[in-house]
Amino acid sequence: MQIKVIVFDLYNTLVKIHNNQHFFAKIYRDSKDGFGLSLTDFTSLLMENEVEDVFHQLSPDFKNHYDQNIQILEDELASIDVFEETIEVLEELKKDHQLYLISNLASPYKGAVTQLKLDRYFSQLIYSCDVGFQKPNPTIFKLVEEHSGFSKNEILMVGDSFKSDVQGAQQMGWKYLRINRKSDNTREKEIKSLREISDYLK
Image (cartoon, one colour):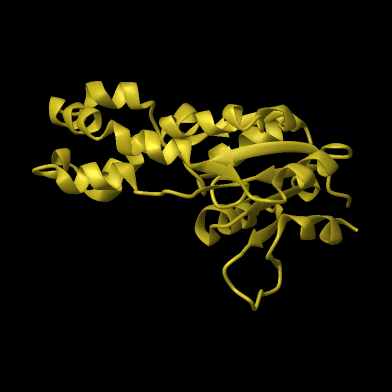
């Protein structure tokens, strides 16, 4: 069956952070007690809620650390850029496919999509911090099926994370490609560049 829908991850798939200082991990480490949460729970809270809501859910110490380190976050966000082939590939794929975006991210990192004018390519932008679920939870993937109306055999997932993207797609019965720019030896269903998607679709 022909692929009708292509779903992309965002960070390390379409865009990269050149000056990644791991802002939220830093303020967690700098806090006295991790704001009363394990790092896993702290990360999940940020990934599944708007940061403004997190300000109200955690102690004032969190917002204090956030405000004191805001320049680090702003430097990170200013350093975000697309990979060299991203725009070219999205332009080409959009001609014959519905494109969707699913990203696990904290809400300050959403702005890069509109800033880089990537939103014009996608039928829907699905962020974990908006919907309250992260990949590989099936709930976030089902949003694509419901919105697009296409079946699982007609959907392709493209992302860099084995757990979030590959395993998430597998459990849905979607086809998938894992982008791996770091390795010279790519495995089956791995690509080194987004340009290789068109070869897979032939």
